Image (cartoon, rainbow, N blue to C red):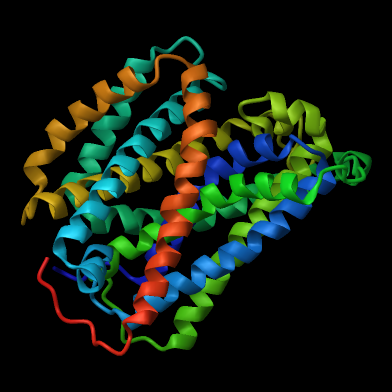
Amino acid sequence: MKKVITFRQLFYLFLVVSITPMLTVIPSELAVGNGSSAIISIGLSLIAIIMLAVLVGIFLYECPNKNFYEILIDLFGRPVAKGIILFYGIWAMTLLTTKLWQYTWNLQNSILANTRVQLLFIVMGLLVLYAFQKGIRTIFRFAEFVLVPILIIILIYVVSSFPNVRLDYVLEPNQMSFSELCIQAGYVLAVSGNLFLLLLYGDNIKDHSKSKKLFARFLGATVLAFILVVLLVTIVTFGLVGSHAAGSLATPFYIAMKGISVLNVVEHFEPILIVLMFLSDFLGICLYASVSLRCVKWLCSLRKIRFLYVPFGVFIYYLSLTLCRSQFDVEYLYHVVIVKWNLIMEFVIPFVILIVYYGKRKIPLRDVTN
């Protein structure tokens, strides 16, 4: 397969895809406690995120030019590998439908309250189809192009809001037990676990020859940037509206930014956040759709999948309307199913595979054709 993706683009895509949940889902879920418990939970999640980053680094470097499916074949054989990939394909499609609904609710709760869900689905579907026609390289390069402006804008918002942050909202004494803090940390891990999905594109990376130190810097900077954005957004959100209000809002950071002036000059600047979340949702939907299609390709031993783009889009459209009929269905699916499923698929199974890999390390991995 043609090597068209760089390590930088892989990590940039992960960060861009994480922007919307960092601005919406994470502050809302961490509001079950208060400011102090949220900060502690983010700290606890950092341990697991670092472990996942090390796992990703091990496989990307020790199994160069191999994707996740090829690694599974080497370790377990083709039948077992296809069974695992089937499980990942079902998970990716469920994740994709949930992400589509979250994208529509973000828009409806902010600037497009009277727009029909079906129209928003179709618009996003056409954009994703156009991106796929341009090729996966275009998607990753687009993430590389938009990440830095997104982070700069978020930093401007955060710095501009500091004078209005109430420290008593943020530094309330923690009253949660360790197990409750770990449960809260799970919502951060459910987002950060997308780092694992980078392994599915191992056969597309074109710069395996770069030094391990450079790769480690990319990986370390990615984890650090993720944690810093989550921490700053959570502190600012809680410091402006309080943990109770943050827990009851669908887009707490967006609401918190209303009335904040940038450099005491520009006001009502918050609609730009909607653009940032739209870009993040677009790339997130592209990523989950790509993962789903790759799983179909590997399961069916297909060489080309371009002919599946339109049928797959129609299938996801109707699956989304069937699986979730209201915002309550989306919230139930995410909280009860997706969060736990993400932890299994992006943390538990990969670490089990890592254990198996080291158990068989004396046996060299053989080459596998895709």
